[in-house]
Amino acid sequence: MIETIITGDLGVNTYLFNFSDNKIVIVDPGSDEDKIIKKIEVLDLKPEAILLTHGHFDHIGAVKTIKSKYNIPVYIHSGDSVFLGDKGSQTHLEMFKSMGQNSDYFFNSYYVENDPADFIIKDGDILTDFSLEVIHTPGHSPGSVCFYSKDKQVLFTGDTMFKGGMGRTDFIGGNYNQLLNSLEKLKKLPIDTKVFPGHGDSSTIGRES
Image (spheres, rainbow, N blue to C red):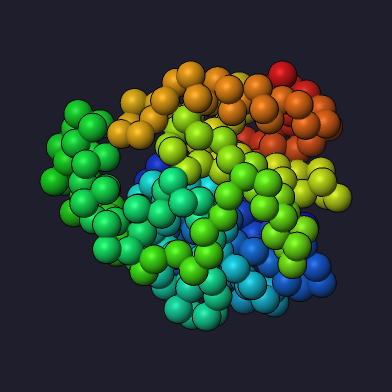
């Protein structure tokens, strides 16, 4: 079972991935923590971890509250670990400045301070407890990853792959050529793999290839 909760002003897809019995991992709790918690409680689910596809503000806004409520660990790639912890505020401020917009407004409106991640993940890691493989897909950000379940044939792509498109690369740390390479990497997965992106509708690897 995969429950999708659309959170925040930017419409982030927060996913509850039911990997065993009533146990779940929460992928990208963007914001609207009350909305996420309500869904968890209504479905009588047991959160085991928070998995972050990357560290951008719109994907991490509810991390602190949910981590505290359920006493669960947070996983992120080393390339995006600077978006959490002591370096989080400065990293986000630099990111907002790189967007060429009102950086102070965005920072004050959207930035939420978070503790450092509990676990740093890398390409090829197998999160055995959750039946997920980590696929490093830099481009949208240096530490962007996808989480792949071979057994359930699902792929959580964050802002790397969307239905009919791909993520932005104009943020600080973004790299267009890296993103193209990451997309090619994902397209080698089985064509019937279901794609669950960070924004918008779901798709399949076959449709995006």
